Every structure is written in structure tokens, then in C-alpha cells.
Length: 366
Ligand SMILES: NC(=O)c1ccc[n+]([C@@H]2O[C@H](COP(=O)([O-])OP(=O)(O)OC[C@H]3O[C@@H](n4cnc5c(N)ncnc54)[C@H](O)[C@@H]3O)[C@@H](O)[C@H]2O)c1
Ligand SMILES: [Zn+2]
Image 1 (cartoon, rainbow, N blue to C red):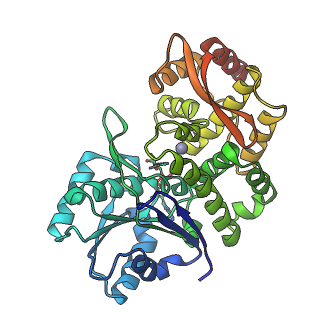
Image 2: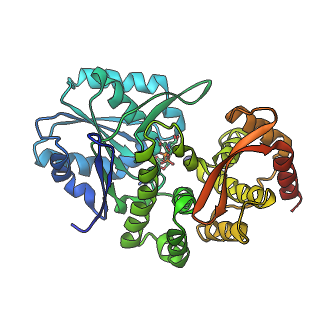
Image 3: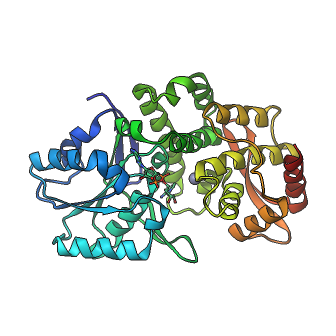
């Protein structure tokens, strides 16, 4: 089986991410290598869209290898990251007789991964967890061990850190993913390049056409490098004390756009794509960015069919208010991750609100 591998280095919690076409067929072997034997009962959590194509084939291949599986199928979408769905899966796990040697398999995108991971983190004080990502965006959630569900008062407010034993990334699953979701995933891939790998950004530009068509070899490389950037940062800062903040490039603006468009008009990837462009403009304005950073940021994002311009209907004042709710501010100063160059970002702690407002107002007029 042809594949790329990457180890997320976290001492005794280190785990491999295996990426390649058709890997779901090899799930039994990969589980065994991760120490999950066919004696362990498996709970597969997935959503209705993913289940349609991938659940039965996975269950069959696992059954052939002697694994007993139970499946919890949830409704697709962010609203399933809820206490009530969590409660339902816990009930199904108890009824199915899962014990401390059992494992939870997350077959799906980031929603399934976050929810199933939180189930695994809390069932009997924590059992084994395996991710089988089926979206491109989930390359991001497959590194770092953050698992969570939402509370009506806010996103990801109930959660834990729980690292998977192995991530099995079958790139062929991405062929059924709607193109808008593919683009959203590329927003995070590009982000990982912009944060710390200029050569990766160049490579993403050169190979944009074939990557957009999901060429499996290139896709495996893109996922591997995207994961590697995040893994390097997470290894240094597992519980988010410092460096991990750099992963928020474009996210303070992006979260504000998402919140104000009521999580509908723009998806997460689209919102952070625009956010990264505005961050580059602020960086130029405060004089820390090398020439051309804005242009290059916009260029690479456009190649992946992502928006780069100000979202119609939003006012700079409302966006600034939403940003202040998202991040604590001190005396009218905001901390933002800004690019100095392609492949180099920094957390700048005391940016004057007026500068941010000015840049945003120019964007509205542009
Ligand atoms: N834990 C982390 O570090 C982390 C990082 C980034 C994002 N997230 C979370 O991830 C979530 C977003 O993840 P996402 O973008 O993968 O969303 P998602 O899981 O909702 O998937 C997007 C849509 O694609 C469908 N889908 C998934 N795989 C498919 C396939 N192969 N074929 C056809 N349809 C498919 C899903 O049913 C859904 O409708 C958010 O809740 C976010 O908070 C977590
Ligand atoms: Zn993100």
C-alpha cells in the first residue's frame, strides 16, 4: 500500500498519521499496529453523509479481521456537536457493552472527530480513539488532540485533550466531498504553509490544478506537510500556552465573520481565507510585512477557489466588536497573528484598534 506517514511527537502519546489512497481497506492492519487488537470492541461514530458510502465497507473489512463493531450514525453538521447527541452516543456505547479496552473510531470530518473524540476522552475516564478523516479540513483536527462539543452559549466550550492512537487518512474518500468543502480544507492547508513553510506555499501554487482535481499522490503530500506544520507547533506546545497561538492566523477575523453571518453565508475555510488576507493588509499597514505578502496570500487562496475580498453586508465596526468578544483586549489594543513574510508569522500583541478599523474600512470601499 502506497502511503505517506508522519509521527506526531508527544512522548508516550506520540501517534502516526498514515495517508494514502484506499487505506480504509487496510484499517485492521493499521489498528493492530497501533495496539488495538481484534479483542477490542469498536464503536464507529459517523454521520449520515459519510455512512452512505463508507460505513458498511469499513465494517465488513473489520469483521473479516475479527473485530466486533457497533455504529452510531449522527445527523451531518455542526449542530450534532451537542450535549444531546453526546448523551445518545454514550447510551449506545453502554448498551453495546463497550469497556475500558474498547476503542472509538471517528469516521468523518471535523464534526465527527471532535464529538467522537470527546466520547472517547470521557467514556469510562477515557478509552482509545482512532480518527479516519473523510474531509480535507480534518487534516487540521487530526493533529493536536483537541476534542469538544458545543454549548448553546458557545462553540467548543465542553472538551478535553485526547490524542488518537492512529490516524488513518484514506484520500479516496475525498472524491465524494462537495467542492466547497474541498476548498474550505485547502484554506487550512494554505494556512499551514503561510505560517511556517514558504517552499510549501510555492509548491501549493505550482500544483494547484492537480491538487484541486484531488490527484491522490499530491494530495497525500499536501496533507502530510499541512499536518507536519501543525504537529511541529503542537509538539512544542501541547496544551496551548504559547506558540500554538500562531495556528490562529486569519482566525480572529474569520471567527468574527462566521459569527456575524450566523454560521451560514461563509463556512469556516472561507471565513479564514478572507481573514488571512485582511491580516496581511494589517501587517503591511503596521509596517512589519515584506513587500508582496498581501498579493501572494490572495493569489494562493484564489487558486483554490477561496474568497479573498471583504464579505458583503458586514460593517467594520460590527466585525471589530465581534473580534473583541472572541479575544480579550487590553486598553483598545488587540493581539493578532500577522505575517512578516510568506512562511513567517508572529503574534503581535498591541495593535491599535484604529489601524484595524482603517484597514477594514478600505476593504469595504475596495
Ligand atoms: N479539534 C480541532 O483541532 C479542530 C480543528 C479544526 C476544526 N475542527 C472542527 O471541525 C469541524 C469542521 O470540520 P469539517 O469541515 O470536516 O466539517 P464536517 O465534519 O461537518 O464535514 C463537512 C460536510 O461534509 C460531509 N462529508 C464529510 N466527509 C464526506 C465525504 N467523504 N463525502 C461526502 N461528504 C462528506 C459531512 O457530512 C458534512 O456535511 C468544526 O466543528 C470545527 O470546530 C476541530
Ligand atoms: Zn480553522
